[in-house]
Image (cartoon, rainbow, N blue to C red; front, side, top):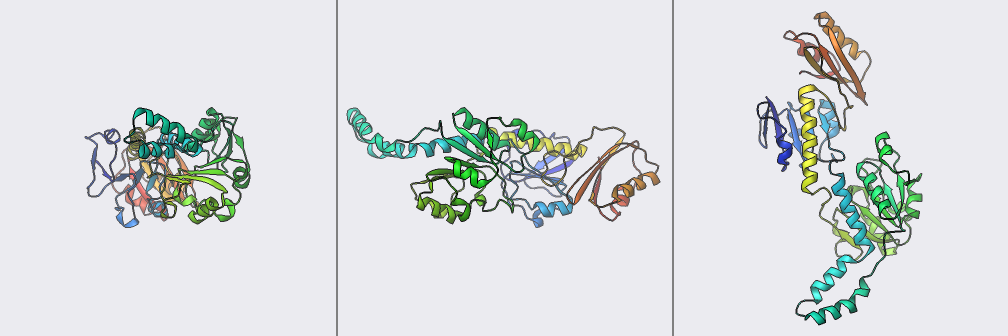
Amino acid sequence: MHKILTHNKISVKGLDKFSRDKYEVASEIGHPDAIMLRSHQLTPETIADTVTAIGRAGAGVNNIPVADCTERGVVVFNAPGANANAVKELVIAGLLLSGRDILGGISYVAQEGPGLTEGELHKLVENGKKQYGGAELAGKTLGVVGLGAIGSLVAETGLMLGMQVLGLDPALSVDAAWRLSRDVEKVENMQTLLSRSDYVSLHLPVLEATRNLINKELAASFKPGSVLLNFSREKLVDTPAIVEALDSGNLRCYISDFPMPELLGRDNVVQMPHLGASTAEAEENCAIMIADQLIDFLENGNIKNSVNFPNTYLERSGVCRLAIINKNVPKMLGQILSVLADRDQNVADMINKSRGEIAYNLIDIEREPANGLIAELEAIEGVISARIL
């Protein structure tokens, strides 16, 4: 029986993936094999020694101590793309809100309209609507920074709206490149993208290289009167730099899903309460994806969409499977296979993958192992953990 500890409210459709005859799932449970969560903040101290995997029902893993998990041999999964459509739709809403003063117009009618007759209301509307005019998106230039699951959808939608779309992503994957329209113009650096774009949308993870990406120096490259949209991560943007760019007019408007106190009360800022992935569909998609990945890992050792371990898949063969995590140093595989050979275990199939300082092995053997095999494997210097599946 595998034990799954949950944090936050996880979609029932995801939890229902865990069959009750194989899994015990609860928000309070002792000695869990895996953790499933959304935004709950984990620390190394709150992760039990029995945990082998953590599934984040979303894309970002800022709330998980990934480096510590890697050292301990804990596989961290996320759900890239599961909430992409939800975020894309909110980004498009942000584009529309920044192009035209829709919020101002709504507020005007709500504040000035009560108590008026139909005729008076029509007159009010006709007299006041000019101050809430704006510009169309068609024909404008949209710069998309980060062309992964969300960024590529935003870029495609920009094209559908009649915009010219510029794209920048130094780490563009092969899969993302296949998804991207040839009509998206690739640029080489941020300065070029910012100086040419009427609208800039950020879609990057927070890494050391991207933290405060939009700083005072780079903000000077914005095309005067442009709009910045941040529906990705709060820490991609240096708030004082945004304030200065807004005050100077270099930025006309800032739309963000991450409210900051310094920006409250400004007419040229729209701040939303982190609504990006807050749709029923996105929460269901994320929960289902993470549940499927945890099940395949716990039962078969396969890894898909991990942020700290290599993607690893092996069709089952033989009688029994070993899943072994070790440091990525020379001669490890030879030592592991030597232990099996000494026990007269024949290998039916195997796969060995590495990522950075970690390596992962799935080894199918042709008969049930005798007692003591796991202890002998874990006694090898450099082996972090071993499981029989």
